[in-house]
Image 1: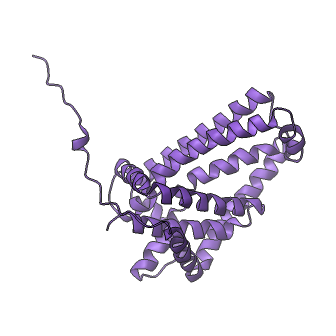
Image 2 (image 1 turned 180 degrees about the vertical axis):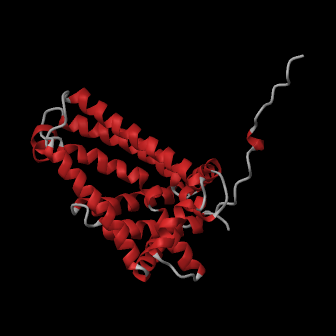
Image 3 (image 1 turned 180 degrees about the horizontal axis):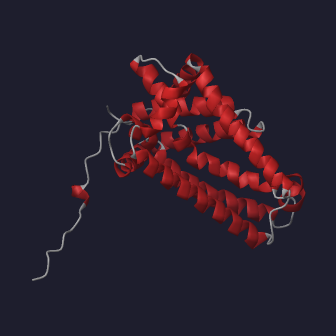
Length: 261
């Protein structure tokens, strides 16, 4: 006799926590709280930022040595896709500040092991990073062919080329689509995985729900985080020492505001 077929329905998924609908002015509140957390423990934030700045310098130098320095541009954009995973330790700083607990750099680093599902979420974000990078290479090949130029000749050879505006528009639209999807599934999922014993799937579903119920607010919040990221990257990565921890701490407070405890 044939074995019975088991159907999986949406009703079988664990229930999601209630989501708050917040006012449009909350972004400034989240930023203010994020800066307060950074100011309370600047050494930890600066240590995190210094690591990423150093990595950015080394990567820029290495790509420059092989004449492909302009690759740092799509790689820097892709960094923002995986930043929610890289900032887990900074979420832990905000969590401990909120609970009135002592905070050390070692405690922040160990936070990555609090929930093994964070590794699964990290893989999702890493996959998105590779998808974006491959798309960027395909778009470049479609318009220009060959290898990306050196960074110092990118403006003249690409931006000022006849097909430059179309190339930049296509890259912006495609990159924006990937970034929007990643933001929707990660805006509260990484802090939630640190805070609660839930699966990566539950965290992503919660994040999507929070994004949709507060979509106008979330568009503004995404623009705010992107601006902080660009400011950090534009000063040859040095700005990341401040903008990255402030954005991470603020993201923790956004999660706390959006998801009921």
